[in-house]
Length: 141
Image (spheres, rainbow, N blue to C red):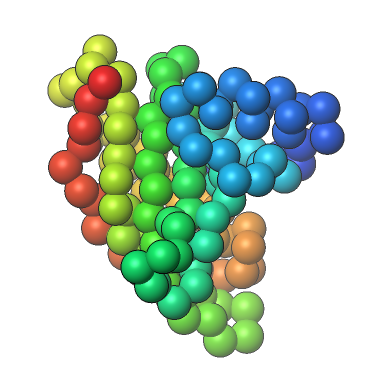
């Protein structure tokens, strides 16, 4: 696994939330970042209610992946099935936006997101049995 969790200080958390809020909704300051030093990528969970039963008025969970110094913003709903310390998770990414200059890298970006979400769920639940992700068409800006 290439992404490793790092706890953020209060100051780092505020800085990240302020910086990312320019391109993605931030509902709460991130407590952790997940860093892939090999590829220079960083993943953040920015809050939301995407793990709750999906209702029309329920907001998704918001995420950001910093990849090649660009913010890839995505949001979605997770359905974890947890038993003891094991999780089987379905993630339905409902919207995804990336800078136009990253066009042509969609496969690598999706793999980075899968790796980041795997690290994220392992950190939250201890053992991940399976992670399934449904990706939407990626919009560019």
